[in-house]
Structure formats: structure tokens, C-alpha cells
Length: 234
Image (tube, rainbow, N blue to C red):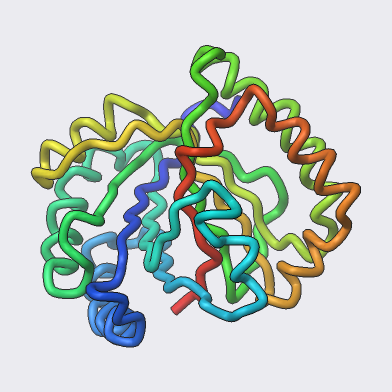
């Protein structure tokens, strides 16, 4: 693993009463304020792409994954990780009138860029827990050193970025306490980036290859813990 890797702070939340348009407009209004709070850190905001072509992939009943309507990501150098609690408090206040109450989840941890980073217009926002039958160390070793090597060739050249955020439970507890919400105990926040929805769908179009990817996840990921959506970057 890279020594002193950067950290990513992630917020996941839903639109109030399914008002996706209001959520998008609200996030656009606060983008400059979030960037100001983050300083020189890289910031990305997104809203879930609700195109019908994605319905089967992200439908909760067929995918075992809870949906999410919006996400904010702030990436900082390791030297700034102590600032994340203060940033979380400030950002959560900005979300008070934008996100649905009691849907906010906040998480943070060191992240590793698995492919050279290129910018794109859509990104997968995916949080999940490890299978309870393996340890945290076993999960991190599998995800970083085995699974990435299987998934990256399958997803192909259209994959513009793949960041693994290895979430820190202690940090997540501190963030929850700081913002006065229930802490989350996900083990992973997965980030993959594509040019657009069509590139994403093409990336996962080979059924045999995707079966191989999913087979590698058996006994490693608690599928029922997942919360995910393909986000349109704002």
C-alpha cells in the first residue's frame, strides 16, 4: 500500500420526497461554498442518473443495493485529515434544506487510485461492508491486490478512474458524532468514473466477464449492505 495516501470524505443522501430536480438545483447552489470549505482539495458533487437503461442495474429489489440520490466527495492530502470533522459539520449544514432528513451518511478513509485518473461526466458512488466471515485486513488485501486486477481488464479502456476508499471506522464514528448523526460502518467506498452513461453500460456489457467479477466478490462483500447509484457530475 502507498504510504500516507490521500483521504476521501464522502456524503451520501437522498432527495426530499423524491424531488430529484430540487436536489440537483440545491447542490448547484452550494457547489462554490463546498469548494470554499474544502480549500485546494478536489471536490465532486453528483446526482443519480435516473435513466431507464439503469433501472435494472440499480433497482433495489434486483440488485440488493439501496439507492442514493446525491453524493459529495472531498479529497484531501493525508496531512489534512484532521480537518474532515469540521468540514463535515459545515457541509452537513449546507445540506439541511437540500437533502431528505435522516438519509445522510458520512464516511472517510484513505484512498488508492487503481488506474491513472482521467476526468469524466459520470461516476459510480458505491458503499458496502465486507462479508462478516473475513477480517478487515483480509478484505483490504483482497480488494486492493486481487479484485482490482480482475475488474480493471473487464471494465476496459472506457474506465477513466478507479479509486478504492478503504474506510476508517474510527474516523466514521468521529464524523457521525461531530454531525450528530448515526455513524456508518461501511468498509469500502468505491469510485469508478466514465465519460457518460453509455460508456458505463458498454464497460459492463460482457456478461461472461461480469460473472467472473461477481464470482470473485462472493464471500468478500456483503451485498445486502450496498448503497449505490451512477452519478451525473455537477
